[in-house]
Length: 201
Image 1: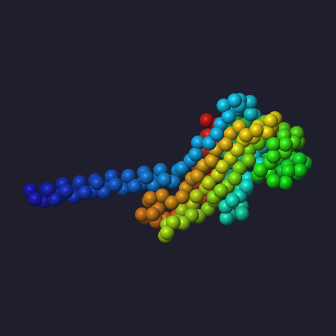
Image 2: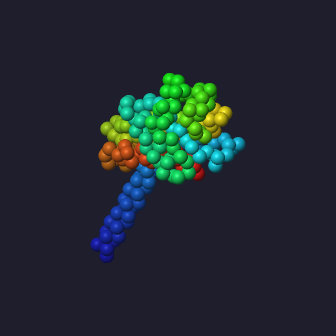
Image 3: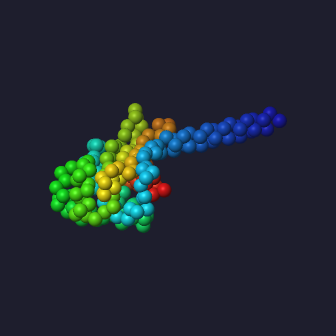
């Protein structure tokens, strides 16, 4: 009888341990997927936007190539939706030169309208990579991407959509069990998909 009670107690202890571990894993997953809702102009007919230019992103991260990498992933994801045509990079760059835009990451209203005269598009998207790469907290290490985007309508030069997202980071499971978190390419795709879903719900 005593042996049977010990087995029951051991089984209960194992069940509680498993439940606790699952809870920690869930919390770790939740902690690594943060996002902000952003802004969407209720007066804008987003269905009328058929052609989009994605301008070079600003880069505030320590990785010099981060902006180009994230922009490339974003353009591919946006084009793959089939909802809009994304102007190729070469054509965008030629338009920027012809329009004389020195800082494409932060164009003025006049510059956006002028650019649309050279590269026919219904809207342009500008962005800033705030964080890209490895982050540390004590002995824990993980990868993170933080990105914000804006869509500007080319006829008026006004911002009609804005959103930001942060993916990755150091979750509870990383703190408890170590590991380097998810690969950068996977986190970048998650961040981009989050923003594409906010732009084209």
